[in-house]
Length: 293
Image (cartoon, rainbow, N blue to C red; front, top):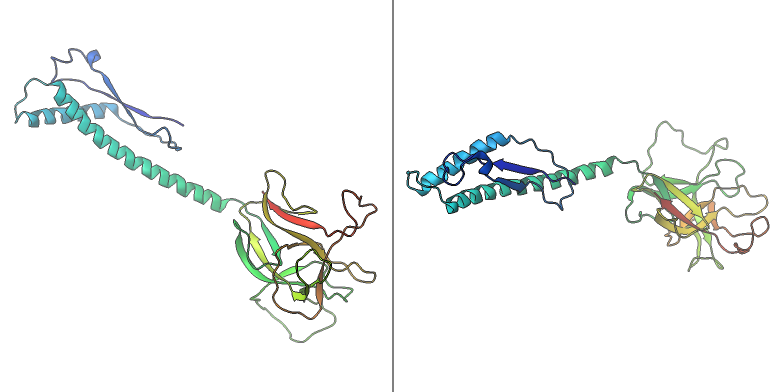
């Protein structure tokens, strides 16, 4: 924080009785910035010009106060002239300080706008948490639970698809996408049954640049911001079924209505062995959290 001081050196041509020499005249220090204002101001001031203006102003004040006749200058006359000048300078300083605050606010807004930001998918919801903006919302999609091929990852399909060249009609030599449904019923971490309920999703733009999904946690490490928490989910772990990715589904999930058992999501449990118990517990549903920094 810097404070700029304007020093006005008054050369007293009309006050010989009060100021015999130039060294006898005192400097007047006026603070240009308030010490609590967090901004930097650079100003180049021609003090010689200020001296000339001040001398002229004081001479005019004295002349007007004596009805056109210059007589002996009194202390009260000088104080009045300097007070008027000080008030004018204070008014200009206040205006300048206001402009600086406005400019700093705009600079900070532009910096935040141009800063790198990360994206993530909030599975099971149609809105983003506080501090994040919606890119688009849609429906979770993936491979049919009985298909051996096609993709293995889940997608968040937007609700307003766009098309290019196409041929209608199914063809067995293509990959297939299906809407994803929850398969949550009985003995689950969620408070109600969500069997064959369609899974919504929303793509969110975080206010931070790095986004990380942490399995088996509900809180973020120090210095990280929690976007949302939930439960780890994937396709059912059964012999003969093909795999999917693990995703973090919000603990306050929503539904888009009833589906027809195509692509599916199940909560994921811990199985002891190479996965040590404790700290893990056999058959306990795994939590997850999405963090940003």
